Length: 215
Length: 285
Image (cartoon, rainbow over all chains, first blue to last red; front, side, top):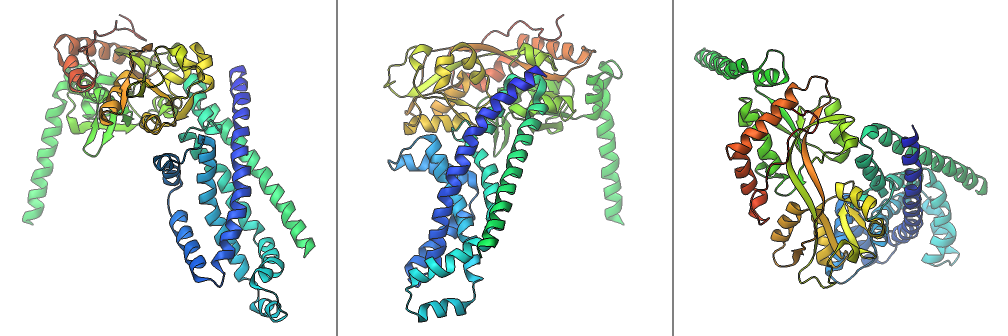
C-alpha cells in the first residue's frame, strides 16, 4: 500500500504537465479554432478554401501522425522547439479543427435575418461577426466544446510517446519499476483522469449556465 | 457429393496428422505443462515488436533473437512453426499477460529483477544484454562516459530498464533525459539534433545505427549488464521452468543457440556469440 502511495504522489506531479499541456492547448485551439471558423464563413473565397483544406486534412489524420510530422518533420526543415512546445503545437493544430467545426455549426444556427439586419444598418462583415454572430455562436456551442476539450485532455497522453514526461509517460516508467502492482498503478492513473475530467465537466456546466443568464 | 467425400477424407487425414503430432507428448510427464503444450501442438509466446534483431514484427512475420529462442523451445516440444502464436507485449502488459494466462511464456527482452521475481518465474537467463550509448557520427560532443551526459539530452525508451537503471545509478543524467516510446524515435531525434545521445540495449543500437547508415555511432560505454529471462506464470511446480533451462543448455551445447545469435544480434554486434549466463534464475537445479 505504501508502495502505491509513493507511486500516486509521483503520478500526481506528472499530471501537472498533463494539465499544463491541456490548458495551454485548449486556449490556443479556442483562438485558432474561432479564427478558422470566421475564415470559413468569410466572403473571401481563398480564406474559405485554405481553412477548408486545413480542417479536412488535419481533422481526418490520426493524432499520432500529426505528432510524428510535427515533432520529426519540422526539424528537417530547420524548425526546432522543445518537445513540450512541439506537443503543444501538435495538440493545438489537431484540436483547433474540431473547435472550428463546432463554432461553424454555432454560426450557422444563427438566423440569417439577424445578419441581414446587421448588414443593413451598415455594420461591416467583421463587425457583424464580432458583435452579432460570434457572441451568440460561442455561447450555444459550450456543451459540444466541453466534449472536445475533455477529448483533448486525454489526447495529451500521446505526448508521452514524443518526449514529454506527462502522466502516461510516468505511469509507464512506474509500471516497469513496480512490477508487482501493475494493475493498481493503471487503475490509479485512470481514476485521476476520470476525477479531473469530471471536474472539467462541472466547470463547463457552470460556464453554460453563466452563458445562458447573459443572454 | 464427391466434394463432400474429399472433405471428409481431408478431415480424416487432419485427425491422423494431429494424432501423429502427439507422439512426442509421451516423452513428457503426464499433466505437466510440456505435456499439455505438446498435445495441443500450440504455444503462445509474448514477444516485443519494436526491438530490431531481438523481437521485431516485420511484414514477413516475427524475427529476432527472442523469436528464434521461442522457436528453439517450441521445436523441443514437438510444436511446428505455425503452431507458435506470437503475442505482442509491452512493458505494462507483460506481468498481467502471464498472471492471466494470456500467454504460455514471454521472451521479450525481459530483464530478470528481484521485483519481477516476486510476481512471475524466470527460466534462463538466456542472454546477457548490456546497454550502451549512441551519438551522432563523429561524436561531436565528445562523450566518453556516463558522466559526460549530465546536462545533455539523453533519449531512452519510456518504461525501459535503462530508464530505471539511470534513475537509480545516474540521477544527474536522468534529470535531463527525454523519453520516447520507441528506440527508433530516439535515433531520429539524435539525427535531427533534438537529442544529444540515445540509449538502450547494445544490439538495438547497433541495428539502428546500421539502418541509418553513416549518421549514427555506437560508443563503447556499456552499463546495466542485465540478463534476459524467459517469463513464466508463477507456480509452485517448477517442472516447466527447469525443463526450459535444460532446453537452453542443450541448445547452447549443440550450437543452435549460437546460430540464433549469429543470425540476429551477431550480424551487427562484433565479438561473436557470448557465453550463456549461468542458468537457474527462479528454478535452480
